[in-house]
Image (cartoon, rainbow, N blue to C red; front, side):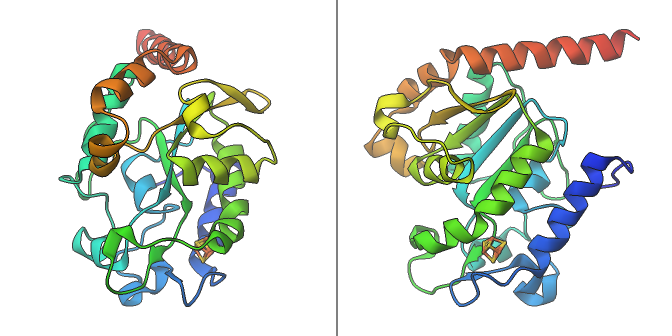
Length: 242
Ligand code: SF4
């Protein structure tokens, strides 16, 4: 990605360089810059941002963590095109008025900005994607999350699941109720940005906790999301009209 030399792009480049150098979670999480000598790493904040890494995005989506080292290697440092969570997310965003393409290795879509509350990969053996990330890793990565949201400065931040919700609230020192009681409802996060908590759209959650049909309603009914999507369409049409 070639970024214009703007203060926003400079701040992002600095953030990415700091992420690559960070060893705060060593022993628990593996930094992409150190997995296989960094061959799957990029000039973006993380694998999720390779798919959607628009610094002018009206919407930032925050997931909990990306994957374990094995999955990171399997997909060459990109979000998997056949991963249920990713495909469900595309469908839910469509309900909210945002059209994005499913992930494709080597091809950024860059309409929105996606990131994770912890930026490095689960390094333990055995439980793969289901490994738990210790609470202290979320705390260590909190500064990266806050700075990312401040740099992009979107109208809306959507969190996927309880871990991401807690991480964003902690990063901005705001309190709120449990996910069950606030799903889809906007809450103030910082000036010009609201937080909209959503359930995680993984196949496991869809099959056990909240169906896709109910989640579609959550995303479709969000006034903040629909307004952000509408403003984004208007601004794209204005640019095309010039
Ligand atoms: S998860 Fe965040 S805080 Fe932990 S090592 Fe990676 S970049 Fe650093």
